[in-house]
Structures are given as C-alpha cells and as structure tokens.
Image 1 (cartoon, rainbow, N blue to C red):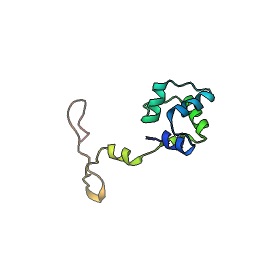
Image 2: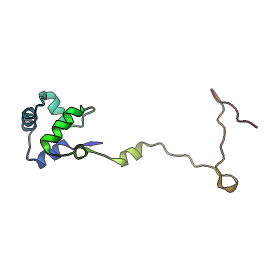
Image 3: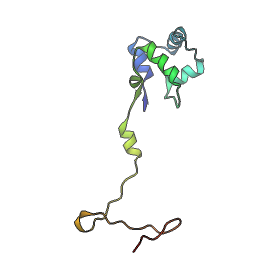
Image 4: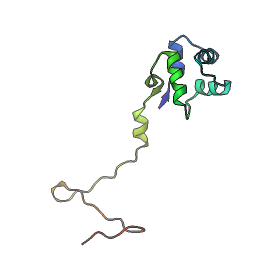
Length: 107
C-alpha cells in the first residue's frame, strides 16, 4: 500500500502539516505534532479507523484515495512456482517429500 495523504491534502489546498493538524483539530481529532509529522512524511504502519474517518472527512475523500493498492509489490513478494512435472494425460506428478512429520503415500 502507498500512503497518499500529502497529495490529497495538496488537492484540498493544504500545503503544510500544521494546517492539516489545525483542520483535524477543528473536526475533533487532536493529533500530536510527532504523530502528524509521521502521517505527513511517511507511510504509517498503523492508523485507527476513527482517525482515518476524520482525515477523509476533512479532505472530502474516501479511504481508497489515501491508501493506494500496489499489486506489483504483492506479486514481487510471491514465491516463484516450481515447474510442475506432468505425467500421462497432463496430470501433474506428485513427488512425496519424506522427512520429519511426513509419511509415505499408500502403495
């Protein structure tokens, strides 16, 4: 996920974190200067849904405008699939893995 707070704030005419913090306070969300700095400059590791709701209200946007899905990063993390060996009729051949906590398949 990519955090898009600064871009959405800029679209709303908010260019400084202090202005955003003031508007959030007017909407009922008191944020410390440190937390506001973290939200403004980077991607938060966590965010309360109530806080996200107030941020979206102030910026007049949806959560999907702030949290942008990046499927290419998910695909890059996915383990590579091993080439399957196929037998007769295109059915994959399953090779048993013997070892700890494994049993031999029935004959």
